[in-house]
Image (cartoon, rainbow, N blue to C red; front, side, top):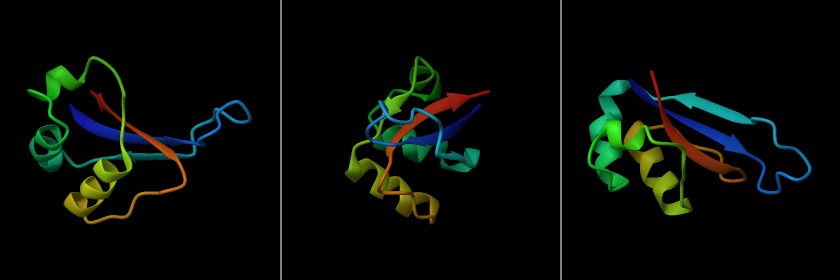
Length: 79
């Protein structure tokens, strides 16, 4: 299992299509799960979670890659 970040326009009434998707390397799983306050990856698998701007910025630092700031970002678990 791995984490995936997806991004949508803030006003989804106009366009609810996916505008960003990033599959994260599994080596980041533990650090990101801890950052988000979940017990483990299985606990996160219950759904997709909206990322606050600060959380997205912290994840960006962890993975060494910038994330879009103009989108609503969600994180979830994929198999």
